[in-house]
Image 1 (tube, rainbow, N blue to C red):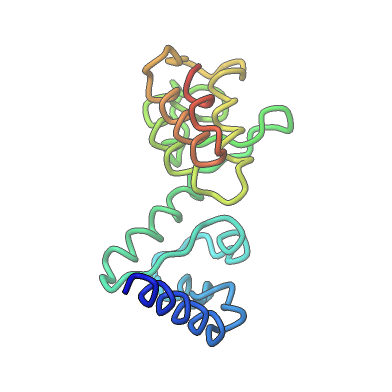
Image 2: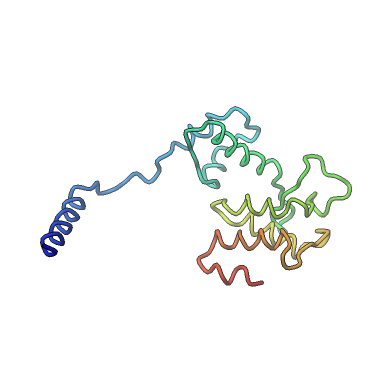
Length: 170
């Protein structure tokens, strides 16, 4: 009896593989339609979004809108500091006098690293993490173990690499 069940499973598996489609479409969601369906955009650089962000759709329109609004906010606060320092994030559209170099402040840094870790090209999140550890004038440097910046950097590293344990040991 066992042998016949085994042969049935093998037969059904081979049959399913034989009639399965040979190639599946690489992209299921229409990226352009996803972006244009939202009404709040200030940044209409559709190419940037198509190259950088993971696309998402769900039956609840409010959740989908919130998801894409978060990416809009990320681009509003993204700043290119200099060729030596790369990208960083601000918290305020108008730079406050008490902010660090390029308008960044440390309070939202962990959250901003959490958001930026999902970008397809990791340069922006790597630059921002490096900003807090190496850029002169990036104050205050709350980078002690357990700080939101270190925790955000750890999660960023986990999203980008398979060697997760090594990322978070620092």
